[in-house]
Length: 175
Image (cartoon, helix red, strand yellow):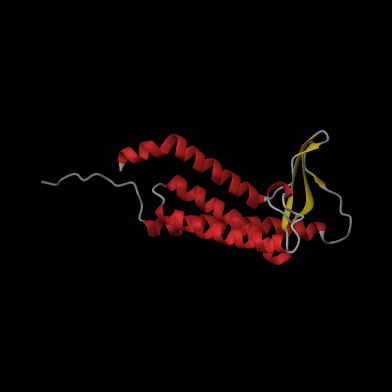
């Protein structure tokens, strides 16, 4: 007689790591691809006007030397080096977390955050600043410019919050 065994929905840590790093790679590549095209457009000549996509969205070129919303952009020469060091440490911590994640939603979320962090780190190494270009606005109010990497990080954080609020107790009960 064949005995039914319970299916364990938790993939191995190695599979989680590979899948999460694949998500990070694809996200980081997409981020760098969009920045490459934005830079190619805006750097071909001086004073290129914004690309208006709608009544609330345009592409512009902003060099962000700080962190979110340009904070700490006046930190002198030590600031960029400190931000790059902090980014590397956070990426390594996230890779460790990825290894121990117990569900695919967390793996995808952490992969998105890693991809965004790596995309912005590449900019800091190449240019000494992050390329921001997405500009949402309503009338004269503009949300601070951001990029695909920032969006990946935001989406990853939202997914982690969703997972911790709505799914982590259910997963604990299944394990």
